[in-house]
Length: 257
Image: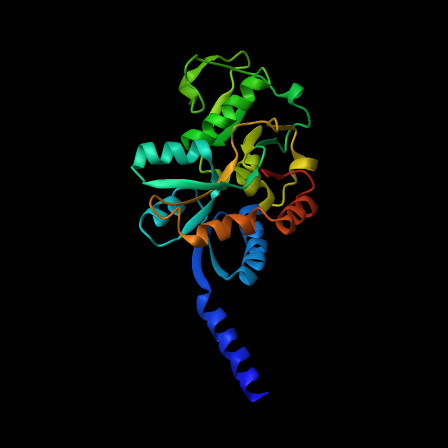
């Protein structure tokens, strides 16, 4: 009996020793909330996740490139591609996570048909999310963008603007506060949720669900084959995490698996 107890204790210590600790960067709102659930799933799989929350979209990639993080989970694919092009980051996508349709919000109108001439429109100031906002306005027939701008148009690429909309570019995290001054603000779902806005109840227009802006898990190039990466992706894409997302966000956040 003593020998069995000793063996079991040694086995438990060995299992604990095999556990791996990683640090994952996220943005506020659903990315952080979901990663907390991922951590619960990952722990019995031998992966301990420390979550670090960042208030903007630039620092998490810099921190990952600098080796201060093991992974991050906050951005969509076009944003990563643009960051690597502009800043020279050597990063790689290892798994898809969620899609968060961008929404249009307003404290002044309840229907996009009532958007006034010369309206003030607040959009994100980073190229990919700002471009995403402009593409949404184009889909709604409010503007026309010059050909060839792809997924990263800027207000300078607006070729037709029948309502003479005026664009104000702000840090994405500040857009909910812009509702006090702007006629409409086009806000990423994570910042909308973090500010108490409900995409389902409060948005007066939403991006289509089949947009190319699927979110991803990212690591440094060269680390993608490390065993913990597979565990992290499997934990994220688990039935438990999917059930949490469906229950928590009621369609405002869509899973990619």
